Image 1 (tube, one colour):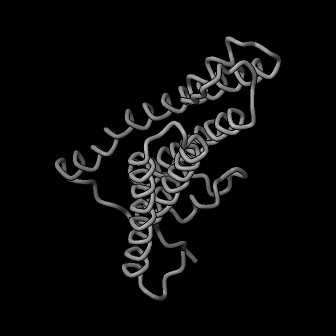
Image 2 (cartoon, rainbow, N blue to C red):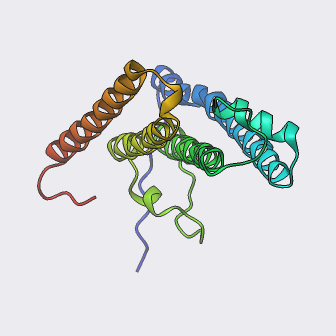
Image 3 (cartoon, rainbow, N blue to C red):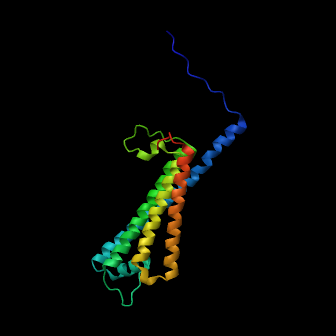
Length: 199
């Protein structure tokens, strides 16, 4: 018994082929984001090295930390305290969360808009990548932005003495707007997907 022949696809016309190939113009954008990721990795290690050096009494590293986190005090800072350590750790967490956001945009965006990565049987395939599409990517990005905003807001509240009330108020309002926007995106995605669609 003969095997059925695979369906043949007719070649695309020149204009549709050009339009479809234009998706590769996004490739330099994703490569640029990979370079931005490398900058964040370098920044993370610089801050971590300064923190470790400050623990061992390096006053130059301590002043660099104090300057980078925007910490101010009436007295001259000569040693690490709990507030400075907490602010530095939150800044490091912030870098990690932004790095996670970059990974979602690079991997998910490339998979969705440029070309398949073909990671179906790869042991390190991200769980979310198996069902990623533009709607899922939007919801995940909105959630990641809320997490980053939460870290920034927490850093501000810990160091609230150095901020004006108006700054605290606007940061809180912006964070609430992010929350409402994410809820609206998730609700819209659910309504458009229909009741029978599982994410």
